[in-house]
Length: 390
Image (tube, rainbow, N blue to C red; front, top):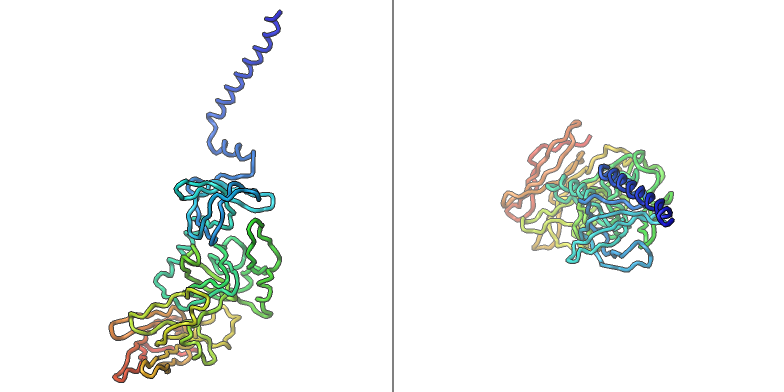
């Protein structure tokens, strides 16, 4: 009787074991990608590649034990710290979080908001952009009027080209600029409102901080190609929307503008004079030592609706008399169709600087020699024929 009762149970157990063995055999020969896909079906998290890494772009951020609001803070990271990205997940409020491993002694693992991390691949693209202009000296310096996106290309067509958001007052060197048609830019201005921690960025039809920037009748917009110090941004190069930029003209020359804007400037002093760099504070550009300067000017009356406008239209050299402690005009060129970059070099006692100028649809290099005469007065001698503007 007992034997007849146990027999069906034994048969069922043997069938269960057989089924398990068959399933094990099937999974044994499945490719890893298929197994990963089956695993991901059970949740919304995504595993990152083993080689994925990123750099912290926030000044400070917390790595937390989970994505929950009540999660514990495990460690604080600062701008420039490198982390390994292990996994990504989206929360119910639309935020994306990264599961990361820190490069600390403990190898701490935790969660951080994605907006605080710049992927290594994107950072490399910024480095390549900066590498293109490594031999070009700073043409000017500037600072931001408001929180603004640093982009990989001069266009507001979407978010794909955004590197990171720079803070208001950030300083940088300007290595070039470009005008683009507004037809290639988004009608929606970039959002300059920095989201608060624990909230998802809100997409609106027009940013409040940018709503007053679009002027009626404008068909083009100006973009600056910039170079940044590591203290300002882990990404060393990129593009910034021109309307968010305030040029930081040195106080030594700012009062010598005569109806034209200063668009580029470089110090024309002895070789041991400090090179031009971005100011280290919001008002750093105001304080500069007196000296001689090469300045590129641009008329404010030029039609900015054209995409093919020149970079500047006059060369202005300002000399400085140390004994009398006053500036004087050493050289002012006729109107030209001038283009960047402005480059300086020294051959001992004399200094040379060069620009590019349009000549019948072609660009030619124009060099100038700067020297002091027997009385110590700065003199400028063009070494090449200067094409006149047409």
